[in-house]
Image: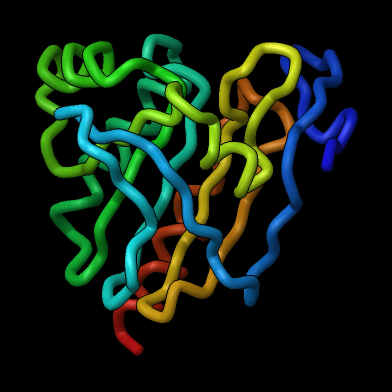
Length: 170
C-alpha cells in the first residue's frame, strides 16, 4: 500500500509505504536489528513501549527528538522507549556514545525495512523513515499514533508521554 503525499519534506510531498495505523489497531510485528546486530521485534507484550521513529539521528530534529525521549525515559516507570531509524547500528551506537544517550533502545530498520512497511513510515523515494510516534500498550495494541506530516517538525511529545503514562498505569 502506498500513500502519496502522506508526508512532506520542506513542503515537498513524498510517498509513505504501508498502512496508516490508528489507536486501537494491533501493533504489527517487525524485524529489525539492535546495536549488536541481533534480531529484534515487537515481542509478546507485557510492557508499554514508546516507539520514536526518526529519519536519521544525524539531523537536528531527530537529534532533539531522541535526546528528549532519552531524558524522559528515566521519569517513566513501566515504559520502554525504542528509537527506530534506517541508520546503521554502528552509526546509532556512535551517535548515542557521543551524546550520552543510554536510556533508550536503538533499533535499525536498514536491513529489511520491515518496520517502515508494517507501520506506514517508510518514505518510498528516499528509503528512510518518516517522523512518527507510536505508543504500544502492554497488550500490543496501539494507544497513541502520530504521523508527523512535515518531517522537519517535532512530534507532540506531551501527548505521547501522557498516553504512555496512562497505559502504564492501567
